[in-house]
Amino acid sequence: MKHLFKKHKFYWSQKQFAWSVLFGLLLLAASLAINYYANLYAIEKAGNSVGDILLNILPVVNTNIIFFEGAIVFLFLLFVLMVYEPKGIPFVIKSVALFIAIRSFFIVLTHFGPDPTQAPFNDNAFLAIFTSSSDLFFSGHTGLPYLFALIFWRQRNLRWLFLGSSVVAAVSVLLAHYHYTIDVASAFFITFSIFHIARWLFRKDYDMFLSDFENKPEAAAS
Image (cartoon, rainbow, N blue to C red; front, top):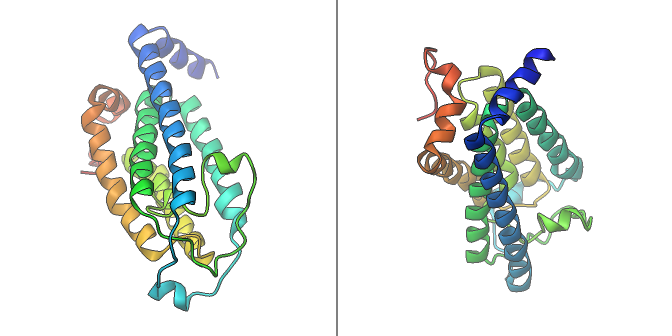
């Protein structure tokens, strides 16, 4: 505990670090606002459902516990990680903000209606701020864990934890028919690009995050 306190004191005593975190939080707030209005637009403009080879085969399974409660557990895990390793806070926050903003852009572009056979969708008012049954392309539940797998690539246990979480999320949204197959498959490719854009935009934050791994033999995602 004393070592953890020293780490936080070391980083938070640096003005550049504190300002970087503040800027990241502002970006995150802006991206969430954009996401909210993108969701409203997607609901208003939602068109007809489309055919999907995989969904035509898969049975409909209610996976709400993974889709909603699982997402809360995932966010709590991220919070614990950031408490344990504060140097990663600026890059993580900014990467998530970039992910949400870019996904919001895609939500506005695509107007597919939800699959009519989908499992009952949780209409919790709080969760409605972040997601709906119409924000389909691309799957955030699949992409966000994969983004963290890329960010924590040099930490093998976390890499496999987040990769596994991404796969579980992908399977759950397909079984519930919450997403089309294209939403899930594209999430990996788009998220990979987002990660590299974040590395380029927030180079100093990423370098600080990797500072303890410079001499380790295992390569980062590239």
